[in-house]
Figure 1 (tube, rainbow, N blue to C red):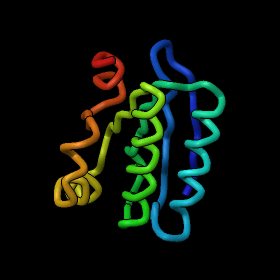
Figure 2 (figure 1 turned 180 degrees about the vertical axis):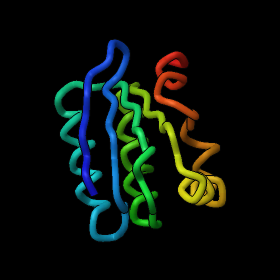
Figure 3 (figure 1 turned 60 degrees about the vertical axis):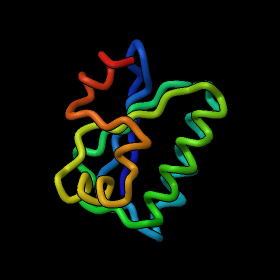
Length: 110
């Protein structure tokens, strides 16, 4: 799994590629904690290159969303592949965390 970031006017865009599973989920959570510690309070996670997410990945996202809520921040997801979106829908996460078709749409919603 690779994680990159870039600053936009309204949010930090975090791009995740590869697989988020029991092995890589902690890396993802640690990276998000670093971004939060740097003072970023608006995050958009671009999953356009994420091929797979496990329950461990979902747990990391939920933990990050709770941290964001605690600091009055916003966490949005964008560009989920159908297989990844299905996991979010089945688990009920799509009702908890805003999901957008594109990063641009997520930015407009902020």
